[in-house]
Figure 1: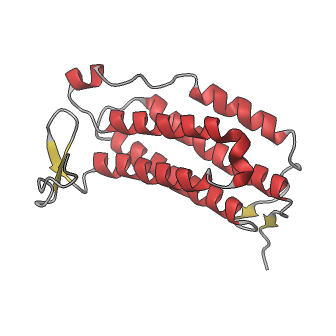
Figure 2: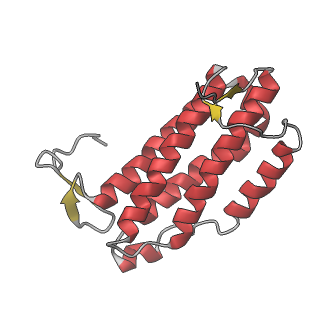
Length: 181
């Protein structure tokens, strides 16, 4: 199968179901940012410190593909054929965060990203997740999208912040507190 199709050379792209839209359409921005988030998540989980949680994060990556497919589909018949979105994911995120929070120091300051490459990567993924959430909120103002997708991204950004704190802890890296002058 060829990767290139030349169909996007005119500045449009195809949605699931065949509809074509401009590549800067809000829908494309939304699922494109989810794709970017997934790539950053892939980079994040390559850090050895997350090896014990690899399956958990791979499941998140798979769920992000599902989320993207829902955003990329407007045709009702095609939507019915999509894999279902995991309605238990947010609860699983909260459970994981609660477990991790038991092992990190109490949060007393706003934190600056960095200190260790894995911590910095977690914060990059968190920031991209927030942007994906904003893109989905914008799309929801003009199109019908499942509100569960926005809740999922909101909680995922919390999870990525918690992941950064976890990584600081397991790598023995001091968190960098935000200080005003």
